[in-house]
Image 1 (cartoon, rainbow, N blue to C red):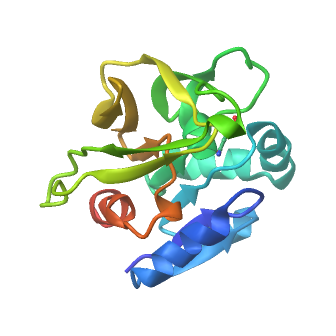
Image 2 (cartoon, rainbow, N blue to C red; image 1 turned 90 degrees about the vertical axis):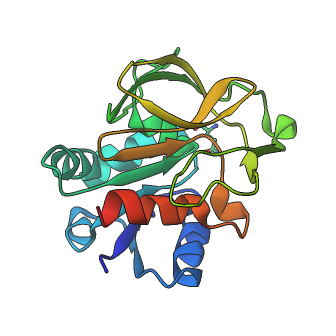
Length: 196
Ligand code: GLN
């Protein structure tokens, strides 16, 4: 089984590592382009986009992740800030780095401030019998999709807005499954993107 890297420059990477270990998936922290070479998939956790902008450029991981994604050897799953980074455009922040893996424009902190964080039970269409019971989605200063390209597949919505989507080798979601003990989205990533 391929090792899954979790981008560990900043943010809540530890909980993703814990989730992967609980699932029995080999996992490691990624801080440098050398770390990145050892993994078969990458999770980009929640965090702070403005801080990440500097750290990605400084570490050289901006180019290293882009290169491997574009040559088809690095499936990516971004949560919250990670989802923002997968977009092609960040509303009101054109200066911030984003990878452009998914044809969408996102708005940061679109649900309000930290105090406006919330949880919601959402239905997901993940296939492979993973539908079942609703998913407890945790939103923390979460982004919203404000434009979505026709080529993007949507697996879950909240109040009609897409909250889990993919394009090509990239999965992205605005909520934090690593804060729950429900590993269905991580499993979906591993089964359908990393091991595909
Ligand atoms: N508000 C953060 C940002 O825009 C993202 C929030 C998160 O990842 N929990 O950078």
